[in-house]
Image (cartoon, rainbow over all chains, first blue to last red; front, side, top):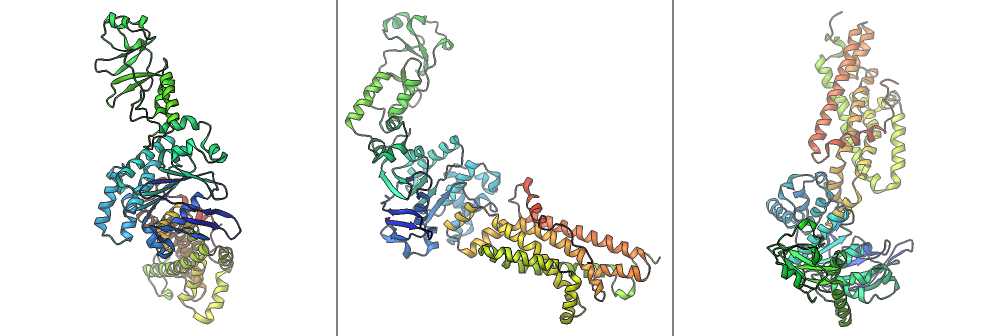
Length: 371
Length: 234
């Protein structure tokens, strides 16, 4: 987008000289308070709104040169509340664009069924009507419908803001998974900064009046907000959030305080740690206990202190590790492998040390780690 | 008393013949009204300013007594069925235009935005999205228009026995046979009920996508437009 402006006849400027280079095959998030012109910007890309000034280029070609319906059919579009056709079955909804493009009925339906699976819907729902689906399911149909004709570009306008937080998280994870498989160029509008940070490869923060405040990868936004507006918009816990972008793989784990449930008395006595983590025969955590409260050969799991939520080094971020340590009654976070077996424990102090060194290194890992 | 179904020969029809005639005189005007109302309503949806004057005009037309209509029309169309049907078609607009406008406007904003974003042109959007979603409201309007039209046909008896079943009312008076009046009233009412049931059935077949619980909702919206039944003879 090159210096694009949208001015309405009454003089209101919705978008002001906005220039953005949206990278291919990644998720670009437009985020900002209401009235900042993010939806207008999105709608200029498929010409639902025509810019007053400036040009929008798609792969180097001006989108004004294309027939508007052709352009729109080459871009998937997902909106809040899904906007499904209530008078058509789920399959027919998804098959809409392929049918318009002249695919056969059989081919379109087969494609629709394939997409239902891709977005995690049971194909038995295909013959139902939208009112028979939950909000989250409808939104999945909306995504499937947008993907139906395999468009290179996907425009998403606050697609997940009308569903409850649990469903929203599921939809976000699903979108990231689909994106990993398909590698679309996605432009995603939201007012939710957490959503922006989670999904965006790059995030454009917009301010009221339709001006771009900052356009950067999430980790960079958190470490170097361009100005007070961006800093304020990111929220008070910017420091904690930023930990999401540091990997936990480098944490130094210790197995000293870890004892199996069938450990002998001397193994318990040998440890000088204030607390011991007891594991079962398979190595899964059971709970914490002070060494003095443990009787060899007679460990009752019910009497142990809960160990909280363990983290997986390498997969989870430093933020998750810190969260584990804060939640743990002993102040130690439990690290487990993918199968849930204890690989070690780490103290709050050790995590704090890792945070300091990560900041010092100043390298927020580019590989995104989910908060 | 010559019997309930013994129709006087001056009507030139059997009882069944009168029923057929009655249905034709009642339903053709509603059909014509629908064909007129569809483009009119679409204009009103596209040009918002047009809706209030159109609504006002149809209401004024509805307020013209049918007798006055007949007096004017007889000069052009004579004492024919057409003279009865033209006013009925005009009357049906007062229900059908708002029903269609409300129906088309009830299509959710995001549904229209989605259609637009998927590359639907305006015509395709109207035929494939707006009109189908407006079907429940349109059918609700048709039900009111049909029932009212069936009751109104009888007034045609005033212009040379063009009132089908209504003619029985005049004959009941003329030959002092009250059973003919009873026949007329009951048959007309049964026709109205049957036609209404047929429209409900049609709606249910056309809208498998409506949640069952809310099927009756658009109806009340349309019948609101008509404050009371139009009197048969005014």
